[in-house]
Image 1 (cartoon, helix red, strand yellow):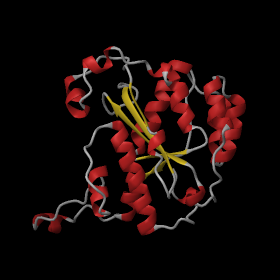
Image 2 (cartoon, rainbow, N blue to C red):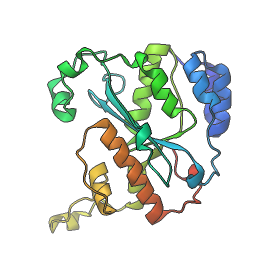
Image 3 (cartoon, helix red, strand yellow):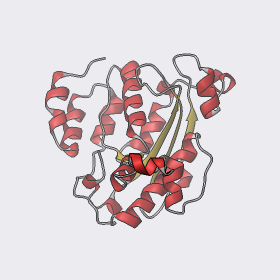
Image 4 (cartoon, rainbow, N blue to C red):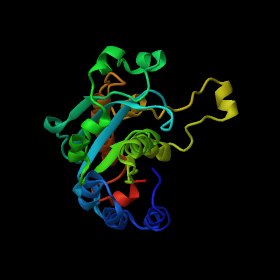
Length: 242
């Protein structure tokens, strides 16, 4: 389940398109080889020309090495349109039992996962939407590490890809979101960069949280608004991804 020395020592130093080329040559699992062979946009490509996919996971907790994915939502989009007809949502069976805290958080119950597929059973469908697109997430410390660990567990190989993180963009736009001690004394509160609060700043509608597909759609809309208000359709994708 470990990465090859080449992947660790060489591929990570390359720009993302070159990383994909190198990883396509070293990947053993056909589904990962196809993912890398689909390619990655050049960093200087205008964001308006980049096919993207908003991605959201609901999980049993926050630690990728200890918790599991229980649902996946994704929707392909560009700056001009969100392709709702191609949106997908799956509930998947975690490898460990659900805890009541996670059930309360995302509403997915033991009954929901009883007949749900393992992630391995839907990987081809998931990657059909990921291949050739740049994933967009809100808080990159969930989707990227959880998918990496899940694939290591099932394929004995991890995955590497760039993400555009709408939360990281909000953090960049609001570096002073934590008020000083004196401002806190007079009641000023920190500025939230959570998904719902970030959307409110752009006049986007309120959506119910903690449904993976709804959150993916909400993330796609948020990136469109961020680019419209703070960047440009000509902004290179390399200025936004991490």
